[in-house]
Length: 445
Picture (cartoon, rainbow, N blue to C red):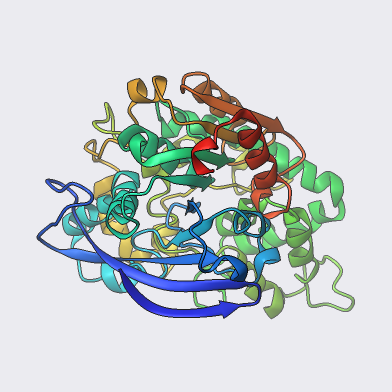
């Protein structure tokens, strides 16, 4: 185990560590030696200061995404689940391969590859490889001790992959807003989520009716003349609509409202078709819609399980085309949610180097196996899921349908929280207490 550094942030003791894992897991078994090209897997071990020398059980956090690095905690209370978890566990915070400090993938890497090489490379950064990394970590660096998993959002997808491939490594699993539909189908997912995007936009306009006019004037200006963001990317109506990607979080309506509030330069900043758009507004839109490497490029491939009958071929765009209410010329303007579109890989500097590989991937039908429906049906690992009834990103009906076919699964359905509910003080504590009361965590004590 390579210890890189050891230090404190307020209220937490942190160890930074890193190991090597194979880029391509084909022919290799987690926990054993390997040959060929390797990449780094970076992770942190986080404990409460009073528990630094205690032999506490392990909890590994499966970060949301795809393409999400582990949390960078500021203090225990800065992320509610961490504050509760360090009372009971040593918490492992990995940076998923290709993110954070784990051999990061970005434009520099993609610019070195042609389309075929890039597509093959990106396939190594999906759930089957991520989970094998974590299982390798468990077996080699933690003595094979079984651990508890906590998966937020895409981390719930990873949870079902873990329970499909390596259930023997897990004592119990928690998920929050992240049970995928099995069988997986990207097109089906977006057919459920686009109507919800429209409802979220309507709720936003009901709360802030003045923003109907402001959004319409902005969209009309963007359609009439070229506007550039501070980084040089064009600000098109379609990119402006992506402000809705945040609508499944709290307080997203307020964040978007205040972005629109700063839009116009004239006088007191009232909405005006003859006023210029302010630099502050353009900077805020750029930051709010900035693309993270791997997040958008992998977005639709998290639904690719094994051999596909048909290629994915831009599922979100195909479903969007079925909904004329999302057309850039419609008023009131609808905002879009968590969905990637072909134009992003042409207009955005952070994504253009991924485009050749994306064109190949969108026609591919061969992916790694991420879910084993039979294994999930006979699952014995206790699984406790928080299902957010109004979740904009992961449809609650699809989550419950999957859970009905996963053995030893339990769920708590609530409309008190949005998709990011885990980061408050309630959700993880509730799930942990429920599992404790059922006896699911007896092995820990």
